[in-house]
Structure formats: structure tokens, C-alpha cells
Amino acid sequence: MLSISKFLSFPISLHSQIQKSIMRWENESSVSEFLLLGLPIQREQQAMFFALFLSMYLTTILGNLLIILLIRLDSRLHTPMYFFLSHLALTDISFSSVTVPKMLMNMQTQHLFISYPDCISQMYFYMLFGGVDNFLLGEMAYDRYAAICHPLHYTSIMKKEFCVLLIAGSWILSCGSALLHTLLLAQLSFCADNTIPHFFCSLSILLKLSCSNTSLNELVILTTGAGVIILPLSGILLSYGRIVASILRVPSTKGICKALSTCGSHLSVVSLFYGTIVALYFSPSSNNSNEKDMIFSLMYTVVTPMLNPFIYSLRNRDMKLALGILFRNVILFFK
Image (cartoon, rainbow, N blue to C red; front, side, top):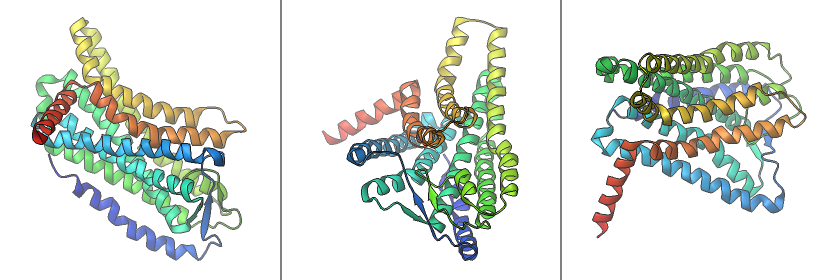
């Protein structure tokens, strides 16, 4: 397995460039910090929800780190499918870490302010890791299509170089999209209201708070959204459409069971991830839209990254076998 650190160096190195741009444009805005209202939780319930979200966050970190460790240690998991899964686990850790620690700190300290540069940086990394998540799910669907529909040519299709190229492309495209949104937002002015009715700095809310013309920003959201969300989703639907057509051509109980065992975990993750996005952006607006946005945002920033390790470990025979071997080795080591 190739080291995943080199894929992180490129997007993270851009953080300094973003910070310089933010500092240059910060003087144009009278707002130096924002007020994150956070979740609408009563003060007497703060401790209970803090413990709940802290345990969910720690479960996310430990569960995804366990997946990465299993894939690293077990040579049988050194395949394209688990190569993509290890990157998905790493992205889930990063994606959740962008928003949850700040939310937990605000709940504990009741210091709800976030500085202008930190807010813009949080928005950048949120869009970066969210975009990588989208592309990885699409690439994993293509990997399942190649394994089921072209099993004899699978190794020649999903070569190591091609898999590395897909991963690198995911980071570069997501980084470019997030950087474009961030640089455009940094040029806007925020004149009066600095209150964000959310638990993190959301691009859509920041655009609403701006007193500048945001038509260009909204146009970029529509155009880049097609690349970051619609393109991977179309690839997923096309891949599984081909898989279903292949199974229907030669219908058999064995073939259906094999397809379900191969694709079941990925389909569960895709349904959870995109189901939440569809419910958030395509459901009718209402008077409590802010509360609805926060609930669905919690789903794909806290709940989904936490559930992914359980979905892949409990529904995947290879992962369960590798986990059993790891536990036996640990027990033998301490005897």
C-alpha cells in the first residue's frame, strides 16, 4: 500500500496561501469574528449532549483508525477496494474533525466566537474533505463494477497506478473547488450581522451574511457542484445500473448473493451519505429550516463517519476475519 501522507501534503500546503489571502482581505470587512450559535440545546442539557457527541467523535476516530490499521497489517486486504476504503476512513476522520472539536469546545466553554480567518479556514477544509468523500464513493462504485462485470480483466483495469491516479485526482479536484470558493468568499464584505445560526461556518450562511454582491459566488456553487456532487453520483448510479443489468442477464441466486456481499457495504454508505444530502438540499423549506439544516449536517458530519467503520466491518467477511486475527494476536501478546 502506498503512503497516504503524500496525498495530504498538497491540499494542506495551500492552507498558508489561503491564510495570506484572508489576512489581505480581512481589512476590507468590518467583521473580525463570527458568533456561532451552535445547536439549539438547553443549558441544563449541555453536559448530556457534550458527552454524547464526544463519545460519537471518539468512536469515529477509533473506528476509522482501526480500519486503516487492519488494511495496513493484513496483506489480504491490499487490494484496490480496500485501498479506496483506507482513504475513505482517513477522509471521514478529517471531515468530522473540521467541525466537531470546535462544536464540543463551544458547548463546554460557552465561548461561541470564531475569528474571521478560522471561520474561512474551517469552511475550506469542510468543502475539501466533503468533496474527497464524494469522489471516493464514486471510485469505489467503479471498482465494484469492474470486479463484478469484468472479473477476468479486473486486475488489468484496476492497476495500482490507476488507483493512485484516481485518489490524486480526487484530492486535486476537491482542493481546487474548495480553494475557488474560499478565495471568492474572502473578497466579500461583512458589514453588520456576524451571527451564524449553525455549529460551523457554512458557505451558504456566510453568503447570506455578506453585504456584497454574491451572484458570482452562487454561479460558482452551481457549476462546481456539478463536478463535486453530480459527477460522482452519476458515476455511482451508472456503475450500479451496469451491475444490475449484468445480474439480470444471467439471473441466479448465487450471482445475486455474491453481488450483495460485494456491494452491500458500499451501497449502505452511499445511501446514508447521499440520502442525507438529498434530504437537506431538496426538501421543502420551512420556518425551522435552520434547525433542519443542523440536524442533517450532524448526520453527515458526525453520524455517517461514525457508522462507516461498523458498516464495513460488520457486513464484510474479509474485514471481520482481519479483525478477529488482530484481536487474537493482541490477546496472545498480553498473555
